[in-house]
Image (cartoon, rainbow, N blue to C red; front, side, top):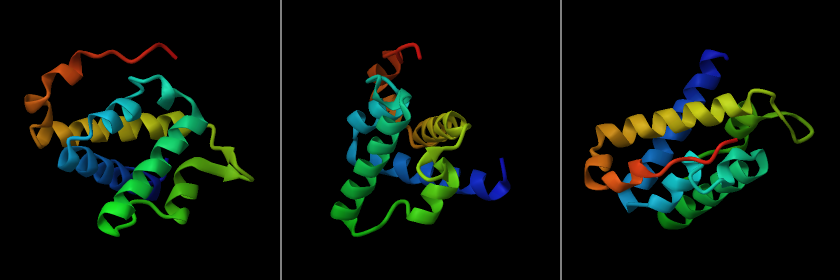
Length: 120
């Protein structure tokens, strides 16, 4: 993975963590972490990101993720996902948890850590 791709992953995860924390959006957290089974499929994970981008844009007029960054992270060509899209997904998950931990999000919502993601 290139340093540029890692940086884009970090940026996207940080924005998602801000969204979750600022709005106490436990639903978005569950979806991203695969707690709703949705995020373990490429198309569903992509839909979760698009919804989060649209919601943030509507609320703040700030674009969380643009086309170039998205393509760099997830697409190979002609809408074929990069073979390592799950690595990017997992890095986003880890970074989101890291950021939320640093913001004491889990101290305020400890029950969310008791939920388990379904098997892939």
